[in-house]
Length: 151
Image (cartoon, rainbow, N blue to C red; front, side, top):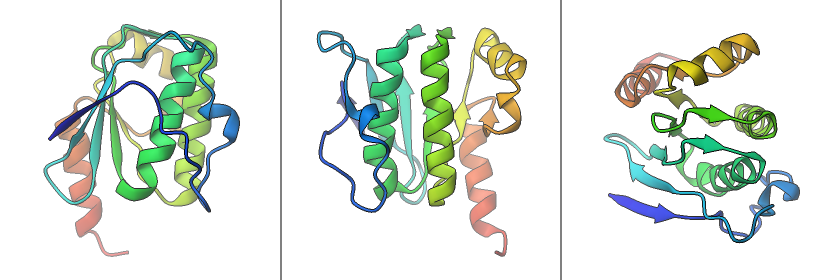
């Protein structure tokens, strides 16, 4: 099941609200191309990014979309296979949304980063806090294993 989305829903998320600044679109005329797909198990979803370059405004839109969908899904894989680069502001948005998700007990792994994106995560030492997998399938397998492990 796939659904096209261009911007986050603007309704607040009581109790799990990500900071309101993320919900604002810095570039109202720009549409971030993403799609959501249900994963093969549970309530997890896969968010596919279809942009080669994610800038500040795109990062805010992406974080806002994650903040809207993740509380109901509880697990979301962000597929970066089409993304070649992020600017520093977009990277900051990913850090903030990842920290928010982790604090709320949600799973938010990143999958399929290009070599340049993986290098960015490594050079900024974010590879140690982000859950990064070589592919969406690998991220799904890891989530399945976590479900089976005793708490």
